Image (cartoon, rainbow, N blue to C red; front, side, top):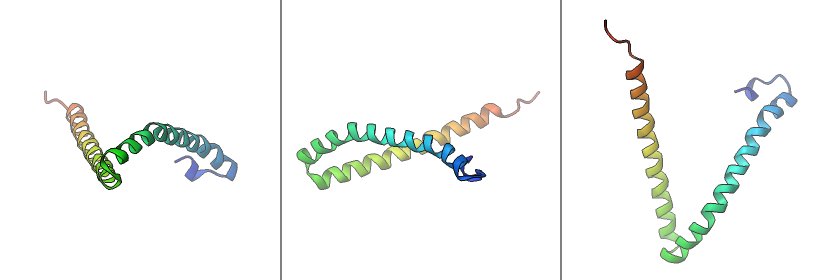
Length: 85
């Protein structure tokens, strides 16, 4: 948000570079962990089945996260509701 309203290129860069650096580190760490697992899956069950498995895991993870966030939002709304006197 700060980068979007930055008055100059240098302010934009100062706000955006740390975010980009963190994203690069997280991506590299995910590659370190995920590449051997993906290779093992491809050798074990085949490339197509590994792709289907990875896609299914991604969809299930996103669905679970969405349900969890929905439940957390409902719980927060219930906790913030005024108590009748």
